[in-house]
Image (cartoon, rainbow, N blue to C red):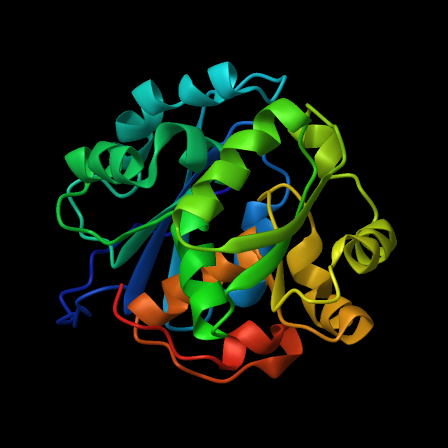
Length: 259
């Protein structure tokens, strides 16, 4: 074996920053999620904002019963994100589960591990996003079955929205939802948008709809809010990031009312 020089420890003084990146965003996502991380890397991550992800158990099919089962491991998933260090926001990335579990229950579960950290759910972010456009009457498009879509309709109606029409694909596997082509989403969005709707909401963090939100807006002539687009937008605003990014969709030029 060749000889190598002895290792020496330098005594040069080191300077330390408070954080490696100025903002920290935690993501709690499903074990089966294909879409949230790429979307957040594209829309949220930057030289100032770091993303830190934890996956929690989830098994298809996507039914209200299976969605509710995610509540128990949620706190542990949040705790695994930079333990004992502060976050600026933490996001739970499942729209349908946020509906059946409830925004408040999700918030309580995540704040057990990360006290006082703002919690972003896709549903609450979508309500804020639709409100930013002043939308009152909306169309909704989901990939779910009718059984899983029904609580979604109840949720948005309960938030004061008049639902012009509601369209679903009838799928019950989120991995299959993630494989729907973006062109199919554009075509479906055009068909699913009522003429008298103020905006279109496309539900599901598995769908790649955020990547074509701008194209959908051009196709339907109305604002589009998707689960991941709304969650990314709300997260950026909470983190104090207010840059206008119209290439991501018109939501990304809107201010957000206090979270």
